[in-house]
Image (tube, rainbow, N blue to C red):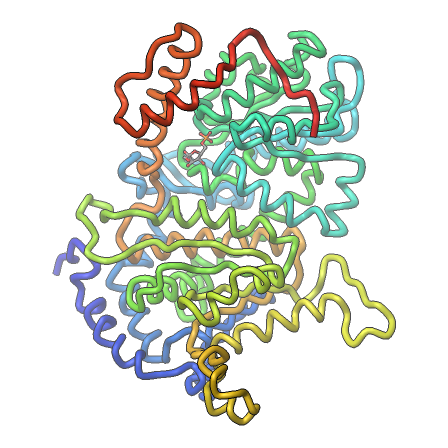
Length: 567
Ligand code: F6P
């Protein structure tokens, strides 16, 4: 029998819909008493421990979710992705970020061609180039070694590398390799970000890496031109060849920009921007900062999850499990958001990366063949490291809206501290919260307990915690480059699992286009008004009023003004 056009028409979907009412009669306080259930909801892979017993599911729910995965042809879709089929059908592209971290001898095909040799060609080039820069064999225009790097890029050409950089900064091994070097990022087209990114940097000792898949992104290209001006106004136009390199799929435009194609690091249209941190997008700036050997470990970590995701049975497959649970939470239980809560400051940029990865991938309103979805897909991702988040938005999570939470922690700290005489080490203090919060959410505190605690009657409603709030816990062995690679790949695949089950295209992003094209009209208007004193026209009343007000302050375009490093 042919598959239904929409997964929501399948019997398995309808069965889960009906099952919701059964789950609504349960409370996590009771579900957590069933040790056999809890044990079945703990999974381990290479020391990564997933505990999803605090999800609002029973073993029966899980069985039904696995059947839904079967109905959605999840296994086949994963195989098609790894097999290089053009599953990004609206852009007619393969989706092969797994090839970016494949072993050298592996064969992965797109358009009948094994892409792994090209991947390794670029990796070898990065290794060679980064070693030259780091050793001082590659010098700047005035003969000085380049110790600082500014990576210019936005979205997927920024958030993944930033997350990994933040995670490695305090890893003892990586930090040792990074001594005396700085890696900065310039993403926002706001000139304030230019000023911040080059504050106290010397063009003589700085290398600029322009990272853009398309090499047409307006923000990145203006920022790249701005930093080109920063270099050439100080060192002469000839210095650009020594101080600027590029990462792109569009090598002709790199050349047009004035960067020597020999100093361009390629990637391919089968790498989505938000899935590109394992390409030169992340590997080049991170290798310049930490050395290729550290970044290779990160790639190996991601590879270990790629293999696990491809081959582990769904019942013990971490990305599949967490993906199915998100589908359950969003679409069946109706929880629209997901909180990413790493109990690790090193993972401070993880939630911002997942925001793009998840929301750009799964924030879709139609199925892969264009049919409007009769159900909600995608979720609102947000988060902060614990314990900071506890003192910020956890009030809402405990007593306001129900938001499924991902608690992420590590057994070992990157920077352990124990003060003599303290009850626990600093990491144990942090982790006390990692272990306590999920139970507080699941169990809550009821009025009887409050009465027993002698809480005055008028405060009982305010101090009641309804509990029954789902979460999952991921405990990593540590936060080495390898572990960080694993964590990244778990989330990349989780998001793909969700999209595969919802039957959407998780690999295109047409939703970002409309705003970009309207900004082009505004840009033309601003130019015409500032330079030719043309009146504002062609916009609605609101935009005309706002633009006219903005244009009242005259900021003449009379020459290059670079930030004065006043901050
Ligand atoms: O925001 C849209 C987007 O296309 C993202 O998908 C992408 O990561 C980002 O812009 C940057 O694109 P590029 O790398 O081509 O400059």
